[in-house]
Image 1: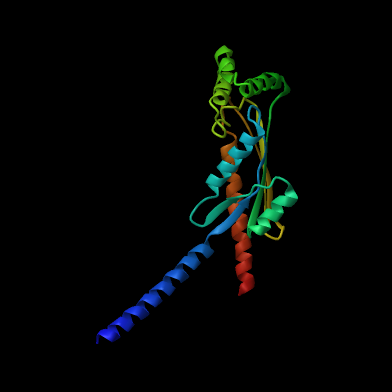
Image 2: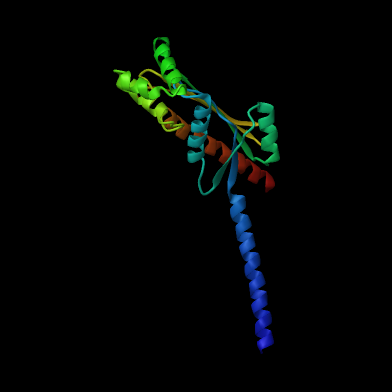
Length: 218
C-alpha cells in the first residue's frame, strides 16, 4: 500500500511541476518586450545626458506593466542600436526624439544658467536672480537633479515636440507619430502628458501587430 502511495505522490509531483512550468511559460509569453533605444533629447537648461536619462525614465514608467516590459538599449548609433536590438531578440524597438524650443530672447539667460550649473555656480545664480522661474531652474541644477525638473526648466511659450517611432524586430515601422505641446506658464510639465499619449499609441500599435501575428497562425 505504501509503495502505491509513494508512486502516486511522485506522479502528482511531476504533474504539478509540469503544470507550473507550463503556467510560467504562458506568463512569460504573455509579457511583451519593448526595447527602448537611447532617446535623442534637447531641452534648455538640461544637459544632453540628463535629458536622455529623463526621457527614458518617463517612457519606462508608462510602458511597464503586467503585460509589457521595457528593455533599455545602450548603443547610440542607429545601426548599432538595431544590431543590439536583434541580439536581445526584441519584438519591438521604440525610437524617441524630444526637442524643446525656446524664443531667442531667452537663450542668453538660460545659457548662463546652464553654464553656471556646469561650473557649480548654480546656487549663486539662484540666489542672485530676481526671476522665480530662473531661481527654480538654477536651484534644480545646483541640486544635481537629472530628470525631475523638466517642468521646472520650462518657460512660458516653450514648445516641446515628441516623436515616437515603433519598429518591429525586423525593422518594419509600425507607428510613427509626432506631437507637440506649448507651455502656458513657467514650470509647466510638457514632457509627461506627451509621453503618456505616445505610450498609448505604442501599446495600440503593439496590440495590432500581435493580433496580425495570431491571425496568421490560425
